[in-house]
Image (cartoon, rainbow, N blue to C red; front, side, top):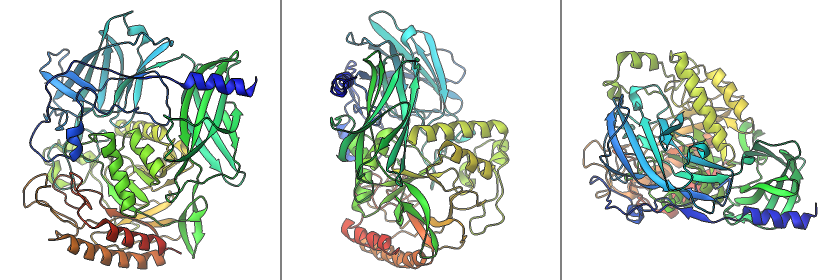
Length: 632
């Protein structure tokens, strides 16, 4: 086929219009009187979070279903509901921005319902209903017929609803959600029924964008990318549905740039390869790094008899992550060069949206501030973010350590209301300052099976984002089990990243990283010569700021004590940094400071919970860069 003709056909096929649902306007306002971010006032109840939700795999024909839905909270066994009001999707029912602000709990179910109309311009073969994330168990009906069910609070899922749609007119979606939070055994991160200390308000229901997509039966469903810098080859594995014998899959690498977006794709093709496993030859590749986060465009097409069947636009970067020996120690290397990874512990919570940022600008803000503070890394702590957050990390140049949300905790205070048998099964011994003494939790096989299912889905959903360089399956022994098998499983899902097997203790030395925690000041009490040694948590210098507190209470706290001024925080921060440099010179290869923002009564943040910067950015940036540069 003539290449210029092929490019023209593909370009036409990839163009589409973005459609946004416009439900009736209702009187809406945030619930409660807790503090809110500046972005809360920018939330449009007719079209909250209107951005394309999947920036690494873009098509033209889609319909955003965010907005006001009917809702009800019923007993868990109820099979129907009568609407008791409106809820703003995609904000969890407990959040202020949902407009509801109500607790659900294990004994109840949360119901949603709304109508939509399929655009007349849609001519594709299939209509997919997508959910970015729903916590925890979702049952979905369309026009009264079951579309499907999904468990797992952190990953996207979709249903083919084509056969359930009426030929014309209004279509109805109904969703039922059940979530046990810490009264159950599913991954739930830092959510608890009785928030206190480092444990926060529960999140129930839809908390990421809901949307429709018009697709062909034969289509691109995803891709993964791995770079071979020795041979300058970029390998792209395409996941395609319903391919037929003569179908041609073509992958094209496009000219990109810093801040490249697949929603405005380039037209200059740098390399192309046919087949679902494509090998793209790189000429003078531009490597991704925090200092130069260059993104290439990707265009993936399926051709049949000379016609484009499907086309998606994406993006990627060129980089590798590995272990290398440098100055006598094992170090992490980005594209073969040792680089000290330094960043904040990022909980990803919002006072107004809880798990969900009020706007895309708010989501981007935290990543931008991380860079402005002089960090090059974020540890995404016990939470998974929407796809757009990882895009911003890719685009702005931040390396990410991705945690698995925990299934348990060791906090006696929040466990008092739990079933004693549940507490017993979750219990184990945490050895955080020793290579010996840690024990597994005696969790049942059902819990393990679900953990593997959800962790596998998280890795599958996120491994396309090149900002992610480390997987963290366990933290501080919370519900930790069968660690060697979990490490093996994690590596089987993605052999291209490093594995931090058990951040903070209970080490089995089967991963790539040994990660110690020490509060408040930095300390490396355990060291292992064969692994990369890191300080996975330290700091937590507290500073409560009047007018920016979740609650006015004497229980506002910080690991490093509560300071009286920003200058006191900077003085302590600088002293910790000087101590950290000593450990860098003796083998510490990365450090994570607690933390990006305050969260509820935890005032450990460099910013308040409502995102006011507490400390002079320029001073913190200078200190942080000196730490990164101290590793020779």
